[in-house]
Length: 376
Length: 187
Image 1 (cartoon, rainbow over the protein chains, first blue to last red):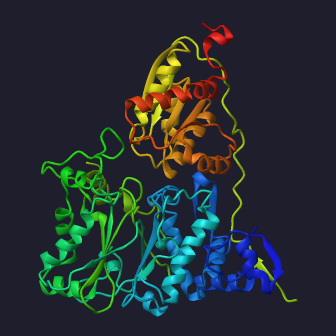
Image 2: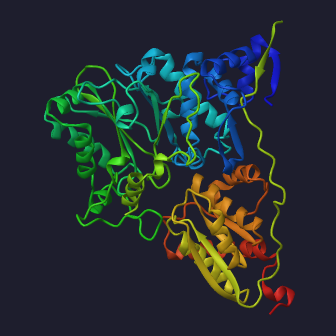
């Protein structure tokens, strides 16, 4: 049962600072009424179990997430997305125990695709990855507060980040719905166009990708590939995952050039491969006999991403001068996988899986093949 | 003064499972079997092997096996625990020289303790606080560790030998309760 404190209203924020419950910014006092409103908007019961982290002996329910969502400043209508993001965080494939502990200081990048993003006022246009939008800022912040307050990932406790980055305050944005024939990330992931999905990836900070004068699709993509290959990123040569945020002009260049998303992703997988000499030229020592296999392939090169399954390509950002972003995962894919979850609309019953149970998407033949390719 | 109620945003740890305690310590006997749970961090295997070389000078060790768990970011599973427990008289897990890997190697050692095998975890010094916090969370507060200077991964053989020598006493005591077999007349 959740504890409740009675405090002077005027002192509530300072008390929450003193308790170590904030991320350094003020939080909204989570009164029982506000928490109840959050749960109601999400159609969740307080004691509904969302998942667990056995290594931390923590089982996460909807109420504790609602408390942190209130503190983050979320409106109640954001809660279906917050709770879906937390469910994704608790997916074993994401491996939050490692993500939240690592010296690498990963942020949890939360990407929302589908109509609900617009309905609640999320931003996928100008400054999509920046500040200024309440839904973007507070949904991402709520996820981080859950990881800190509920799973214990705090500095000096269970978060061993060496440097960290600003995305650890909040890192959430909406997709800019792409123009046909490109499909939304939701559809690309196999869901219906009317669905909304949340995709998460544990990431280093975003790198802005500037290419203002080139409308050739291959030319644009080579700029992304160059960013992916920068040897200061931990995953280079070690088969990680990458989020590619395609800005307005770059989407135009690719689409007008007749390139599909998949063709662009395949191009990036191939053209981001890097020789050991390129890595060593940056002063990085190639691992041998250790957990990360850095044996070059037949082409004499190493992978930044091993397969098309390791790139999330999403459109975001407003019209301007040819800006995009590349966001590398904080560690090789063997440590954590990006996860996508569909947002379950309020009132929708759980699926009837029938007598044979549900298929587990990440155990499909395609996924397993991709995993093997990553480890090859 | 207006008073309000606020709900606490933290969860207390679930109660520790019953039966979490250290495995019984005894000096390693003839043909003792040691297993190193290698998490694949650079120099982990080398450093742990050097430590067991030091133990060989103190105990009649028969075999040293290396279990490579493939990735530093997971704790060994139940099948692996059973397999290692069936073939080990003592276990060293490591190397915890980052946040996630130290937590997971600690988890390996604690799992082996629960399975009845005296164990320890090898970490570098900057992660002492990290694993102390995790030990509480995992239900074994104050769990021991063998601590070497950080960093390890960039060091050559000569420095690794110095690190190994610096913790052989700790490891011997943590695994057996004694510094050497001679001290209890087992040899």
